[in-house]
Length: 88
Image 1 (cartoon, rainbow, N blue to C red):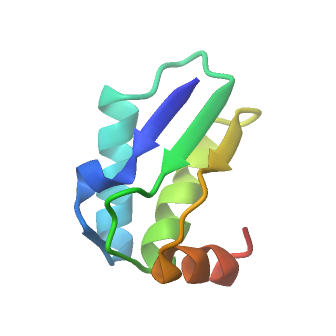
Image 2 (cartoon, one colour):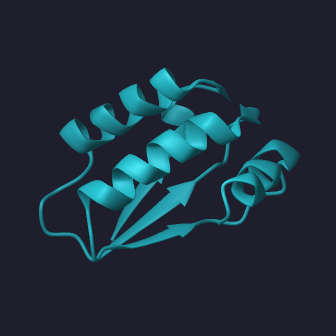
């Protein structure tokens, strides 16, 4: 089980290119080849846009097929709105 703390990538996660960079960094330093579960932690993130989340999540989902990806609960309105916009 791996927990990815998105605040490591900044408090303002706002662009598709930044989402891609975050994914590549997570892949290089946090993610292993044999995973069963990935949890995404939004604690410490102030602003999240749908484009950032879509880029990060899509690359993660495609890069690790069959791995369960779960978002930890967040009370941040930009997080919940972004999850809704991309259909999660």
